[in-house]
Image 1: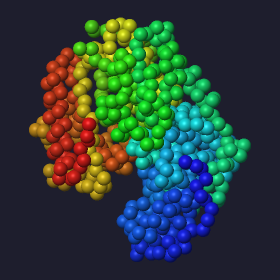
Image 2: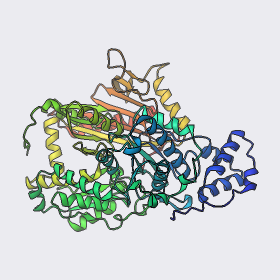
Image 3: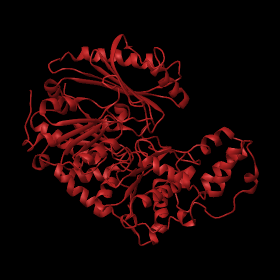
Image 4: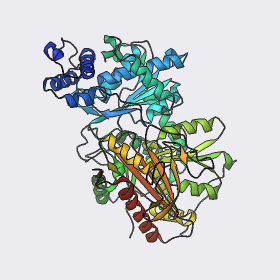
Length: 603
């Protein structure tokens, strides 16, 4: 895709004069045609007007995106509720305005801007172009921009924000979303994703000035002409890899390990960076899945570019591992901030102590509340601190920052959706460093004649089996989602939650959307109230914890169930069967998929 998107030429006067019969929509159409200089997205609106597609126009133009779990994320294409040139310019104008008010030294600190490899021919959009437009808006106001010259993993942006002491960072990415989507992910000066109140204030600033300030905002060539633009790629890549070495403890063992690894970058950015990380750890480069190592915005070899889906999307990786006799498969998602791991199974109790930290009370591990409770079991026995956060790595990143100010260290964090962070160098999930750490762990265990799965069972023997199930249903109708959760909150009459699930008594209910928690003396949730999405957690008498929540980035209702058994309780098949019954009942009784026309996940 070229950067010159046909910005010259008059608007189509005939289309402009047509009316839809809806004054609000007519005004939105008029604004779009007056402001948009991308010939492809402008043509999309003109075509819809000419065809009288009023409903489609209303969906695209009469609502705006809001900042969710990962900033802005939506399909690419024309419309104020989609990702495109105009909405990225509007978003950056709002971001600029807010940062100007917040930072007295904004004009010297600047903003980091990165991008992945997404793109869409029919809208003339690509992550690279949208990153250049983000930079152009800032450069037009004499703000320094650290714009990467090539695609980078998402973790490089928050890392660069901290390293360069920038005021903020923007990453153009939709991570593992479908190919039609893109996003605008914002990081605060501490290197963590933006959280309240910054997200709401930025959105307010966006809405205050929707018209592009000047032609300079559309000038992607500014990044090549302006002296305020710098390219941090070489410096940041070098510093990142240098600091990554601090996570490596057995380089000599790694270099002599006979283990072979297969890596898939899922058509995204991860290939070269994971290869570098392996070299830092002393490993030869992993064997790349050839069909998936190079960037491809169409994700042509996978039905969806999300390694969370497991075996169904790892087919090429597993076949290559079989051919190459590789024990472990590593898969990073398209922007390389998530990591999936698969191990070939073979058809001892073991533990080795590292030197104890001087004060275990200053050591923390974190996980989101919908993730496995296994770290909590570790903490009870090993004596370090464990904390839960709301879903989304922005909560983890900001909590790491807060704890660091008290002299505490967070040595590991994770979220259920295969997001991991080892250490605290980056305040976001990081698939690149996690891939290297997992490889070292596999090599270390192999030297002890243990596989990853054998060590997991050793952990379960010591800390108790944790059997979990995570999946989702798709719902493309927001009012239906509202009705489902309203019914759950009024299940047995007004303000009364369900009392049983699959015949098992529910002993506690926590609803962070409303701030209710029946387990607390004051009935108030310890976790912050989050009204922007739905999330209700049920604790059952048999020890199962079950959560229903809406996704911040996709039209899904996700469900999470986990059976946390006590140490020594090793009848795994019994635990799994009990969990299966509860999970089935959770979905059928509370979500009613058939009645509500929900689409069940296909695996």
